[in-house]
Image (cartoon, rainbow, N blue to C red; front, side, top):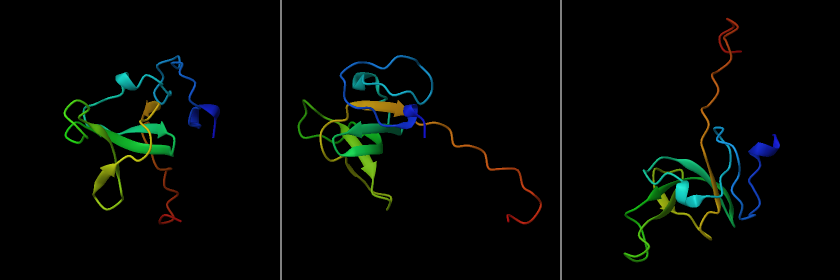
Length: 102
């Protein structure tokens, strides 16, 4: 795993570069359209999506939601995320060797 794959430490500075998968500390720039992104907060690294319909009050409507693995989303626990990055496309499977997947 390269350094770019490690969750960032909170520095308060924006990361440079626009490469897919680059971390950003600008949470205002994170997608709020329901698409999945990778986020980091005080509890760890998660795949999450922003849900505008969930919130503690009208003034702060919306929160980051994570899946519990059972087709149910729950609010991300802990502090608000401090960094995010777009998900990268999964690699293609290796070419078949003609041995039935072995």
